[in-house]
Length: 143
Image (cartoon, rainbow, N blue to C red; front, side, top):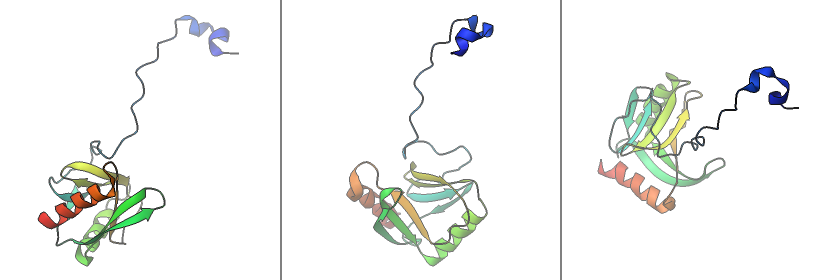
């Protein structure tokens, strides 16, 4: 039996459904409001701290197959950048880690703990792996 048929409080006409719910976030959406982005190039941001990932901070960009994200690029950090990233994530557990390319969000995840493996996952997304890999490599080398 429906509530409308059994409850006198539901005598008012039912409200019309609102607009369709928003689609799930995509990599192109704005980051959470507690994240401050640092601008151009490839940047990883945790809370209010940002690390620009240029040639001095990235050892390699590799294609991998991630069990959850599918085709993915692994941005492998240098030892110094990996240590800085580990410090940033360790100090910001529960906050967002966001990887951006020229201000566009590539991935945003919640920090579960200190990240010490020195790798950042970048989902391939639209355009295929060649396009995303080219854009990431250009950002790392040029800037």
